[in-house]
Image 1 (cartoon, rainbow, N blue to C red):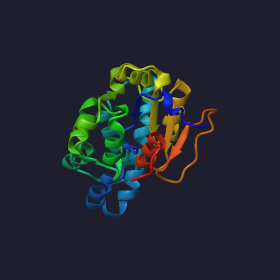
Image 2: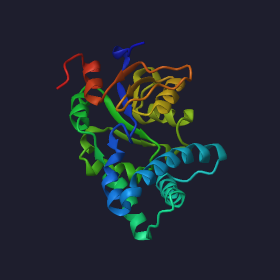
Image 3: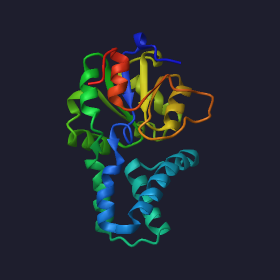
Length: 231
């Protein structure tokens, strides 16, 4: 399977793990919790994802900031780790200052003149807007699209439909790129062309849908689309 590059007019990118490196929180976690940091991080990230699915299925929406805070409280309790409210707030504030992966700005700059570009994320608008501004991506993105608009989370089809509305392009003219295998599967099931950004060793989900392309990072994806060498 391959990307039908001739049809693509817009690209929507997942945020966390695709553009923004969640591991950039790890230094603060280590400062606060020392040898328990890795355990807290593992619980926090897993429960954050689980809560998006559970709240969508339960019909009990909370925005992503509140959901992420709840996930952190769970992680602290599950690991028997003490934290003050000011420490919790400090960790939550890090979501506004996540670093992008090293190649992201260059890749988006290369793609900008050829495609309409957007973020399509579960995160609520304020989280996305501040992280985008912190990394100087404002001029590279045409839209910031949040699942908050439908108050449900991926992989609900209605979230992927927001990419069509936000970029004003039909699904056949859109590419969705994510490092999360479940997210790629959800977008592919909806009908978007998909690119899996395989930043770490993992395998694709067995859900009867496959990505149109796999790239190790966004620079490689840009080269696939533009037909040139990785810079």
